[in-house]
Length: 140
Image: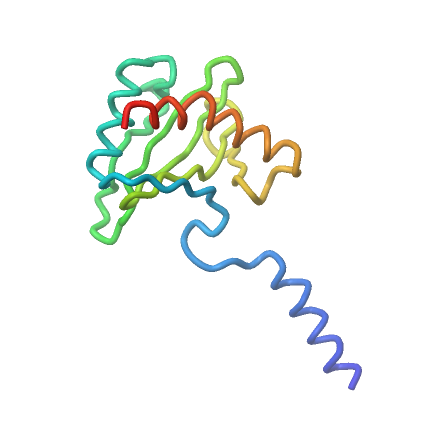
């Protein structure tokens, strides 16, 4: 009986951090436009707002990977003031905020809706919505 309780407790504790899907913690925003129009709007936003473009020496390029199974159009933004890289993707009519990297050295990623405390998470989402998302919405 003790063994059964232990296994149940172990499962309950471990499963709290499990989530399904490739990007289970993504903050997903839906648009009433097709994927190609959404991608075009983001591309135009970055052309008109070059401060949001990740420095080329980092090597992050917008687009789909060479993997044929890649369903996401990956997009990277840069917050110069905070020295943060923002990872997003588009799939269909969805535009998702995925993670924030502290600094320009990759590997310091924090997932939205997972790795930030409640207040920080709310601030990161608001910053993205005000600086990027709402301005893209205006163009659609």
